[in-house]
Image (cartoon, rainbow, N blue to C red):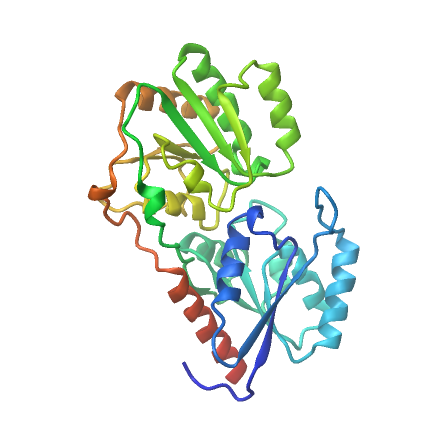
Length: 338
């Protein structure tokens, strides 16, 4: 990497919610922050109110706080992790800034029409094509997210039993398809008494989900584990992980599951790639509850068993978190020296 013109330059990450448990974007943010390289000092500015439960601040507060940060810290290099945080950069345009496109947003993308003066990072081929489609003037740098190496203890699984355990890791929010999964599973559970669903994560739908589980008398069949810093340790003995997202820029949980050699049932999204001989990923149309129900039933009937640690082989082509962070700092260095 080239030496920078100025030593110890500060990188300011702007994100609405910096808590790790909030999603894949937060995981990637902390990986970049924790892999700081020479001549850079990284800090994170979050806009989540310190309340219990924590909630995001409003648009007005976010805009004012970001504008103040831009004015008072004009020499910083800014990395933006939320669309809403692009708004202040429309008014103050002479700042070195990068927007990281963590998702393929289905709507409200007009902000990108006015953001051609910024630099962009696409976390996958899907987010790269998305950015080009919403504004052809954008020239994104493709830097795929890094996949952490799974600890060996997460790979030590119990011998298969007659009970089928399905897992979900992620934010309990509508765009993640969690309600599709619960609706499909409820119908599966009605006719199959040996299947359970384990949910690891928190989110705005937590209370609604708890009420729905109680009303359907599935409290012993759908287990809410809440947030866990090591979710795959909780789910190391599942038979399959379900990733029912409506849209994803990358889908970190999907690739983490492949790295751990789990069977995966996933919505068929452009960001979810498989190797040519992949035999343990099963796709259904995003948002199609009936097809998801059918696929879960077929999985149970086929009795597909998870492999042991001795037979693990790579099931994705993405780099490590360290290599990913290095590419980020190389790109930042190019911007600084431009």
